[in-house]
Image (cartoon, rainbow over all chains, first blue to last red; front, side):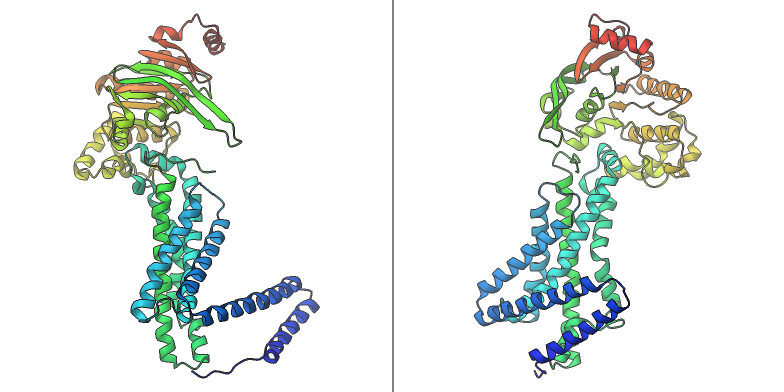
Amino acid sequence: MDYIQLGWGELGFALLFMALAILIVAFERLGQVRSMITGTVRAFVQLMAVGYILEGIFLAEQWWVTALTLLLMGTVATFTAFGRQEIRIPGLFPLIFISIAAGTLFTLLPTLLIILKLDNTFHPQYAIPIGSMILSPALNAVSLGCERMLSDIKLRRAEIETYLSLGANRKQALGSSGVAALRAGMISYMNKLMTLGLVALPGMMTGQIIAGASPVDAVKYQIVIMYMIVVSAAITGTVAIALLRRLVINRNLQLVRLP
Amino acid sequence: MLIEVEGVSLRFGDGRGQSVEVLREISFGVDRGDRFVLIGPSGAGKSSLLRLINKLQDPSGGRILLAGEDIRSLNVISLRRRCAMVFQQPVPLPGTVETNLLTGPRLRGADLEAARERIPELLRRVHLDPSLKERKAEDLSVGQQHRVALARTLMNEPEVLLLDEPTAALDPGTSSAILDLVTELNEELDLTLIMVTHAFREARKLATAAGIIIDGRLRAYGGPEILHESVDPEVNRFLKEDEE
């Protein structure tokens, strides 16, 4: 593949444009100056750090380094999803971790082993970028799914107990809460799937085209990734909802107290 | 005895590391066909006791027997069908009155056609016009929703009906009609009733047996006569408060 490499000078030129935009906003007194400066600095520092770390991981080319990196990313995703929850019940943190792990591994391993047919499954060049693209929808699905389901259960407490007292099992009693939760976790990805290529060209595809890949090859990759993103969101959301049902309604079919 | 409550206690955390005792060493029995009324001031633990019998919560101590069997060893779904609960606030489930009444049979995978045929008779039994079955349950008055909740519970053909303040927030006319209705159900269907209330007038009208709970303790238990006088000064004070 052939692509134009960027030097510090070119990066500085892009920064100059950012500074120009900040000056215009400041001149018009539109009040976004501080957050634009913070954002510019944070994006630079974070991405440069990630670039150097990834370069180290790529050079190491050890399966365990890649696996450890993915585990670390999964743990950060778990903390992020847990941090977004307003209603926290015992067992929610491991539930989020297990759901993310299930959704990510269920999609990442077949992608690496069967679709890309890698000899080294944990080849960092593929495992880490694809892993991160799959992890992001898993994080969103579990985060939005748990949030929606727990707030819905809190709201429907009397109705759910009515179902339980009439002889419902967990799934019957929670019914619509699970449906709403999966929908909340998946809706943005379903929308993306519907408008793929029509509204905007996806990032991975454009990246590959810039890096010299043929548009058709880039599209094939993008299709695979897009399907895997939806699969990851669906599996993570489904696992999270199934586990959450067991967490909020115990084995004696009693609805636990929600804080 | 159909139901035996033996030394039942209930404690739970108050969220600040302290434990709150809701029920303390409660023991009583209910015979088949009884109309057992549990009476006590608000916050005495009466509703919690009904929830324990319906296994919506577990006691911290003691045990509850249904027809001689510890309810812990019974399948919780079949227990809830045998000992059915009607909550203080009726919860209209989404959909029509008919959908509400079919909930129990649908949950247990019963023949819905056969269940549907029972609906007009059951609606008449709870003194509702059968034509209401097409109406949305949430559009009905609170009194009608109480009756729908009762009919919905009866679709499971329970042996015991646990009624949690069924007349709370109802006007005197509707309250009296609901009490007449549950008495009728008790007599005609041989349904055992355990009803929680804080109103002596209702308790005296309905009870064939009664218990008085104050601050989580069963202070008196026996026939309906205990609702008129007691040697326990605290119970007497409660009785007098009602008369005032």
